[in-house]
View (cartoon, helix red, strand yellow):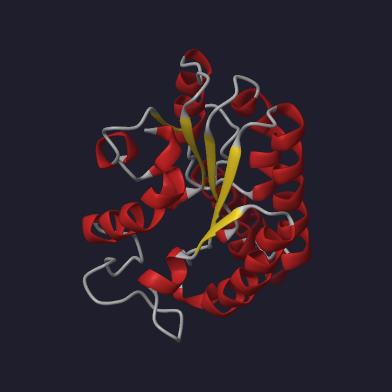
Length: 222
């Protein structure tokens, strides 16, 4: 009797594990898989060409959620940000974005790297390659590097450390560095009041402040 009950318990636990695994795989959909919002957005980007002289925004969640065309209505803006994007993924797609010869390439990437546990060395190497590849393909494109913003409270220290190295990298490679983190975050890496919601997503006031800090670096695109 005990052996039968043990077998039934084992079968029940195995079935429970199978169901749980199915549920997790359903919700944790990779951005490259069918059905994700990022996949659908990417398919639209493929149809909408970047043109010579454009100002192209690339990066992760904070870029994707910005209404950059309306924030900068006097500039030929193309927003190509994707939520969840890592520096690996951006590097793999950058060639098509710079081949037309945009005037500026505005990069904000690295927050999802930190969330996934990437070492800063990997992120910095990818951003360095983004700069070098962009210049090799389109020498006239000005590269603007924006400091990284945290996507949750757990990776704030990692982001602060990454930004120090990112500023040095931009200086070494003569790229423009725009320190939006210093503008939007306090010394502890927390968002200043009224700039983000409780989920650490930027509010309109933060995007307006970012735009104002960024605009002088885009002056020759007007």
